[in-house]
Image (cartoon, rainbow, N blue to C red):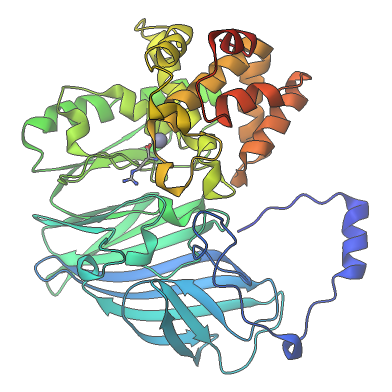
Length: 471
Ligand code: ARG
Ligand code: ZN
């Protein structure tokens, strides 16, 4: 799903120029979306608007059977096109017609319909598949994690390819229906709302629906024994939280953190603007891995986040991503600062509100506690490289950049910048440079140098430079 703003006169000019390519001019869709960090992520030639996933999962054998139906629109005349997928495929239909398919590279499914597809047409692609996802490894890695009672899939930047075929890049957002059958007695967790569930022949089918544009990596699924807690926020938003029954000592601290979701959402709405989606919650599967992820409307938390007691800060971080990351997503993966810098700054704002240190104190500490010879300062938050996307510098130095901006433009302009970024790019994407331009426009101040100092310099800014440029 893409949203474009075209001024009327430009639109008229485009209509004269844009003669749709006929099927005779059809060429293959690109095998990547043009992302410099992940050249094979996403694909060219079409735009997906909806994924309908009908799945069945047996935890005992880790067998996943699926039928994915994608509704898409071609953006060029296509002789063939790619989806990103790692699992074994048995059949592909394009507009109801059996189509040739082959696996190329690590996770490309190349599809050749019997006849070329014209530009600007809606297409329906059905992919049937069956595999043991945890055993499908790319570079030794599978995003599908088995748990003692089920499985979970949640990872950034890549996870979709281990459970559904997609255009796996945050620039192509879509809505989702996710229907999963699991053995009776098990629950499932996914995005959006649980619309219905029913049981037959020993299997329970859960039907999840996410009706707001959602990036592929923010789409999640868990299967296992969960306690499900539902509620409504003061504003009427449905809340669904899910806790694995096997969290042991971390169960109570997880609950004490995640049950504060509506309070945090209400507070963040006052800082960032209206909550963009129509459901919220969080879930904790019984995994050993240690990260959290801002899966849309339903963040994923590791039990280890709660091993020191309640950790509301991680909840604040993942919920801030519902705005910065999910509503407004990166244009390219190099733009990761537009996610992580802001989610970290939200934690600093929360700290200030809770009387646990002001944002200025935290920025000063982040700056002064890391010596100049620490490799931390080698990482440029504005272009950290694929290996350092989630380096502490993107988070901490990334948040310093925002404190510097706030000091330079003042509180009124700063919070207007944050809210405007959300409103202007609703359900869309933005790059680091887009943010710099947006901040300059709203504040009326030249800010490129400030952002160069904090985001694009591979050494520690001197105390004098730090003072001149914001902190
Ligand atoms: N966006 C996540 C967060 O900061 C980062 C997850 C990175 N970890 C991973 N294993 N991919 O909340
Ligand atoms: Zn984050």
